[in-house]
Image (cartoon, rainbow over all chains, first blue to last red; front, side, top):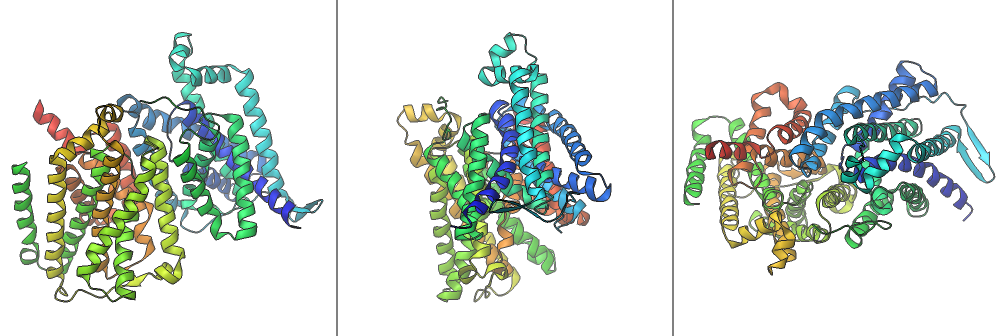
Length: 290
Length: 303
């Protein structure tokens, strides 16, 4: 039991990254109703951009993160404009197949461009563990939690007090009424997709200084983001924060007490069980039939 | 229906000429791979096209069939003639297992679950070293009497034709109507007294058992199994074949599978970028012609 606080702290670090990825997904999935299976590859792309910024261009940490956010927002705009917008008009269910195609495409582009070798970003933060009571954490890991906390706070403020946030919440409650009330639904959709894409990239960038970035790394991440969104209930921001941290802690405890092989399988078993028993999510409302 | 079946037999006879007309093992190898992917795409279409459910786990059933044959052969020394039905049956049972969540979850939730299932099967194949041989896999001895490549090709062609006839008869029967009813409006289908749960489970079971049969065939073709042949990338290739060819049409997946196996062979530079090409093609087809080649052709003709 002596290691319990350390396991919990590790879980909070991993959980913070899950929260960021899941927030991006819950905006895109829960509010825009776009099922983006390539969200995990957005995360990986953020990681590669951080490697590019910090290793090749030699940026300090903050400018590197700004680079990631700007590039990912632009990338999100392009994906929304050229893939999801044209499909949405035909048939919303085809989005699932197209985003699966995008995920396969990006994974193999990463493999060709960056190669199969895992990469790591340079954080520029002081090396060595910092002691907090009985818990040891590296400065990168503390930075992840801090950055996640700042991002989540900014997002909550934006959603509550700004024009985008107000329109978004209106859109999530009733798209038709939002349109009638004069909200430019198209513009909100584009901005939401860009925010979601940036959040995924930011999370990948933060984690890239602790965990390796590799081409196929997004598959597990998107699964976990869906687990979090499903557990939280679609579009629930507060739920995603609780469920993301919760999943991180459960995984850290499983790794600590049962071994790391069990960690990912446990996550999948949770999602299959949750979806089989409560398809609408633990905190979600029951969706209407047909 | 009769024209479809006679066209199929005609094609099969033409295919049967491959070993004698085109000399060399290369063409026979390609023909075998085409047959295996035709079975895979056509069986996936039972679920994706006819019943309107998502499955990104078809390669998992391919793997279950292949590993069933390999493990039976290794531990019990059984022959191909026992392993083929065994692989088909075991993959069908796994299909029932994946079908169970489909009773509750639909659309994207089902799609997520199938990817999760695919990943779990891969992790088990790759990590349960004592049972599956881990990354090294298991090797398989050739079938007695079918040691030569062209003899094995005739065997594969025979199984492929049987599988396609089964699919054609199923989709042309009242069961095919039931599948379409579930796809078009499940609530309505249930209201008029159809047992939609049983229909979905049977669709999943038949689809995955045929994939299992394809798995046994491919395992004997490459004379062994390794987990990396059964990843989500393989599932993605099969999905691309079905979508490109046209969902819910008899010739669609056959056309898609033949095209996507042959294209990387014809354009040798493409082989390296195969999965990038497949991913981009999947997106492009969904945007430009979501009904696929067969669907677009049929629409043209209707006009």
